[in-house]
Length: 247
Image (cartoon, rainbow, N blue to C red; front, side, top):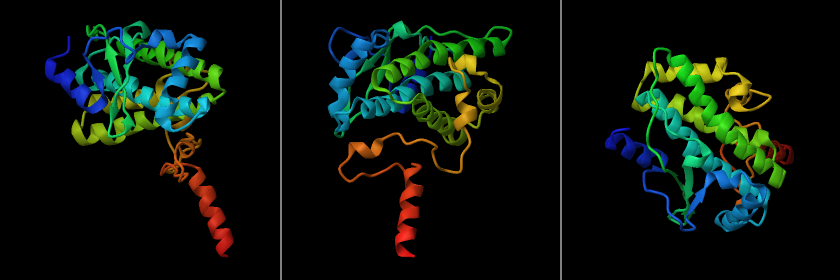
């Protein structure tokens, strides 16, 4: 088990909770979302949280939250605590939660038992990464793509920006952990596409850029002002159009 202060840290920074799942609407079993019909119902339920009626837009915004809730605490626990969370889909529940008029869901785990590396940490790490991506996240992306038509490259770039932030900014500021940076290098350069359940390696595709995303997450369709993310590729287009009009 993790120590209580470690669980509290994960909750405070990554919104993963030890609150036991119950039968209320606010706890959505992740396993059930792999059923396309259930997934569509759920997306329709949360669409209003993003000020949209589009399932494609909802899927993209939901994917950013799901990536944050699932991937960051798992990788943090792996790299800092040397512990593996039980993030198999049947152990994961999405708890609906609103904060300051924003939908800020939490991830609840039913079982908080953890795994630890044996003699070979590399084998343990590969298994944990495969559980995280191939056996959970990739399945969610597959069903979101099937239900809404949203391209999986958008879903994966939504994920990679959080992974990059965790290792290049958050951990370097808080932990300065050599093991964490070695884990990041493994994810960037050595982990193969199979571990991610994909035909391409997401971090190699999106892990390095010049400050701009390659894909648009459709956030601009959730607000009347058509505001875009700072790294949105649409920013380049808008800038080019502005320069063309002023020249």
